[in-house]
Length: 588
Image (cartoon, rainbow, N blue to C red):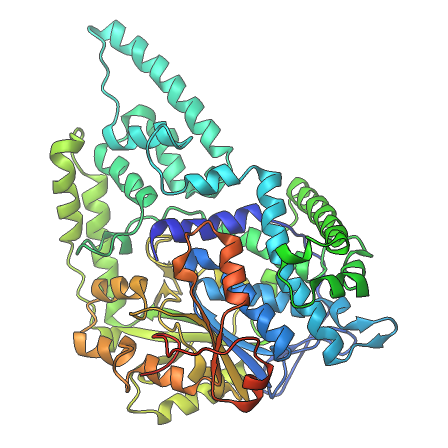
């Protein structure tokens, strides 16, 4: 997964922004300390015995594939009442739980819906994500931004002039002090105008405020190492080098602003905020459900009735988006504790112990290098030296002692998982388990998707740093530990477990033998191979074959993906069964 792919994930979040907040029903706590929904709420609280669970592989900019897979599972196999994943999958689970929390999903007239009645409604909500993407991109004019992500030349991207300045600085051609001051003033005005235009753009509003403050404060006189630091954030991730600076440098994104938008999407689907009171009932009408049956959103809207349902959705979405953006409402879903409505385990890797001291010292050295660099430098002759200096900052993490694979969830489920993983002494991933406790969705979403390159490492108090949810991309065993009767894994075929993960592994000095025990798909005893064996079914998509902006392809491919399974029930209900044992979907 490359940087463009991860940035497109950001584009999706922004351009689909839609929501508001309203007061939550008061909850109650179980004897285990878990908060559950109030008895008078139609939306269910998390089950103590989840029946069908989804293990979701994080995939960055291919996020729409998650919803295609979930829609297929719900439509064909049943309601998913438990889920686990990290990184971008944490966002997908948040959205799914938001749909799950919508009281109107469960209300059929004056009675509670049956599970068979809920299935097509929930599947339609999952498919409508594609409608939200299309409407939001059109509304925000975001298609140009999304297509331009990763392009850094001035002719193909509106922010090209800024990137050109970050690379080469400003060389005043004036002769004499008066002439130089005059040119400096004119050039500064031009740069300020370009910066103002960029800050008002879709992407510009999500850029790290520290980067924008540096450009505002220094104008055309930003020191070269500071300029190149920002340039690196724009240009992206490169795990083909030994440069570990992305562990220390400021990320590209303003993650709190991004997560607030994610929260509003959740509120929209949970039916919170300034919603048309008739909207979701209209979407759940027999006409819309029939138009969407066994169809993607794109297929649905090609029929007259499907097109009418799309118009209803677009109108509600646009009204909601405009209202919430104008009023500045904040999401209430973000304040819900994880697992309030859906049994959930969200993964996140953390640096602990002496690793925290090592990281703080390395970060101090990095900032000293960047902030006290030379006052002038030439990109062509000095940039390589700059990169070499950043890559030489010592950070030798003792992986087995100073990094843990953590999970957030409800108290009761975490206790079960902790006890079960302690018994799997010969499984490397289980030996690294850490209970991160119950937290709000906002706390979690500011950490699990915030991986190196998109964000600086995020503190967790004074004793830990979050390094993102890359650690467990196949969380089938922890779902089994949580009590799930059946687990379907949403994944893709690939010859190696994770390109991004392998880059992180190099930066964190994970020993080769440990890496093989964790992520080698050719090792039948590795943690990822064991996880695949534990899955009852695998949605075997091919999302890596599409570019990061091919949202429709991501969804459609996953929705129609073949299923790898030996389970008789899943075999009988699957639309297409996997014939060839593809790597990443079937264990060796």
